[in-house]
Amino acid sequence: MKEMNVLVINCGSSSLKFQLINSSSEEVIAKGLCERIGIEGSQMTYTPAGGEKQETVTPMADHTQAIRLVLDALTNKEYGVVKSLDEIGAVGHRIVHGGENFASSTLITDEVVKAIEECNDLAPLHNPANLIGIRACKELMPDTPMAAVFDTAFHQTMPEEAYLYGLPYHYYEDYKVRRYGFHGTSHSYVSHRAADMLGKDYQDLKIIVCHLGNGASVSAVKNGKCVDTSMGLTPLEGLIMGTRSGDMDPAIIEFLCGKEKKTVNEILNILNKESGVLGLSGGFSSDFRDLEKAYQAGEVSAIRTMKAFAYRVVKYIGAYTAAMNGVDVICFTAGIGENNSFIRTLITSYLGYLGITIDEEANAKRGEEIEISAPDCKTKVLVIPTNEELAIARETVALL
Ligand code: ADP
Image (cartoon, rainbow, N blue to C red):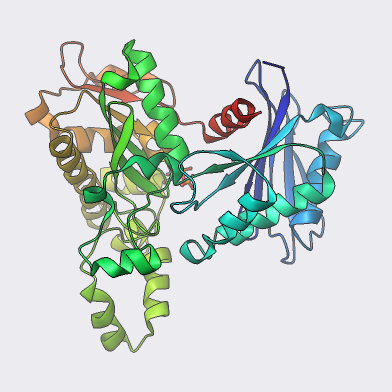
């Protein structure tokens, strides 16, 4: 395969994260973040490999302007990493929702843009922003091939019984109301790495991936296919997250609307932004570093919060073990899963029924690929740092 540099773009409504990755060394040549796009005080941070991180506060009226700044930085004479835009061979875009239209990544054409637009309804906060990123890149680099890599695609292999809700069936037929799942790029990357680490064939394994970051989800991967995942139509379902509630009785919404004299939208906003561990800890923090410190200091709000967070993960592991009739390997990834050994201890303390015991010395390590189950355990427990940008770059190159 031809060696090239791939620009990976993750466009949010007011932010844009980017990495330039070399396809053959898989090294990050430069990376950065534009924040507060279209808002006063926009700023870009840019870090070339081996160089100083730079912060530029400059107005960015829209995403096109932000991408222009990114391209200027990458080609800058002083601190740039490529001589011209010709040295960027492709762009890989992270797209949040592909609905049922996309079961895999795809090269971006006008039809693909249209099909992504059709999914806007399903992810009104994310997809329009992703599309703005595509259009801005197209304007500035019209001849550079671009790929769309979807958060939902990996989960499209789920069987009907896993993706259907217990609702009138015509809601699925009419509006495509079903489980989609998110973080698919991460679940795919981590489950493949797990097979590599164990030296086993991906197709032969039953894998549970716990992606525990600010947003968090669990997936069950059986014989090389995702068979279930905890997020649903939207990322609100499943685990207790940084600020999202996760699973709850849907009747709570109407109950709270009445008690608090709020609209459904206002309550949903609370379920997305003020709930989860932030809400459970009484507004103390959504950051597990703070929560762990407070837990160790005996703070009751942090204790109840971390226990509830861990317990929800434990329930999903149990459910997915049953769904797959067993589990060979459980993986922890993302900010909390990779770095917080204490939460891994809380979760794995429930897993004696799987014969799991933890190697405390291995578990004390942080942010590296490591097996943390004791050597004689039949079910393995692995920590695997996720790398969604690298996975997007690989998918992009594979499509060309
Ligand atoms: P997202 O990508 O969904 O925004 P991340 O995967 O970055 O979220 O995860 C954020 C969470 O990871 C925070 O709760 C944070 O406390 C936790 N985290 C990040 N780094 C560390 C660390 N070094 N030690 C403990 N927890 C960490």
